[in-house]
Image 1: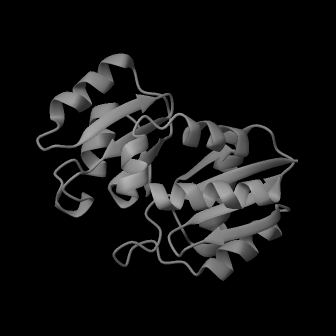
Image 2 (image 1 turned 90 degrees about the vertical axis):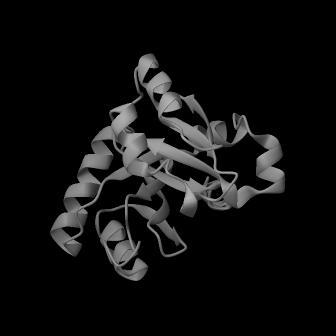
Image 3 (image 1 turned 120 degrees about the vertical axis):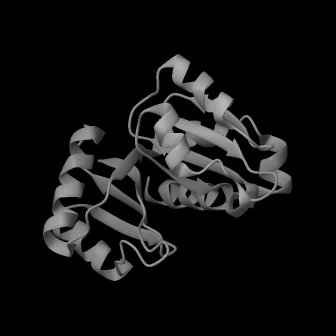
Length: 182
């Protein structure tokens, strides 16, 4: 079985995509996923699955959540091995240690074209720093994410793909949860 980290986009954020984690876990368990755990209340899940095609499983999860919970959202899956690489390849180690709430990993549905990363860099109006790596971006928000004009909609528009972000503290906790299922 493959251990996956799953991120649901825009769940329990500002009153949108409201879903109880108990109902989410039950829906996923009902699909035959094993060891389903949720972390926090914002759509972070870890589980084991027989399915090895993450893209196919993302589509199945999105369909199942719409059917069973009336939750229309995107699901971003990474295997436990991919999650380890995400953590190990973090280009902002100092920020991870000193200000982990100001560092986010943004999971992307598709890897952006190289020129899209340049477009994103050009769109930055503040002190934010971005490093792209395949299907994720590492972003430092030195003045806080809430005040930044580098919003998720700007990121998606510039990179040409859907996205969802988690701060470094959550990334580390999800890594620990995935390791415990392996």
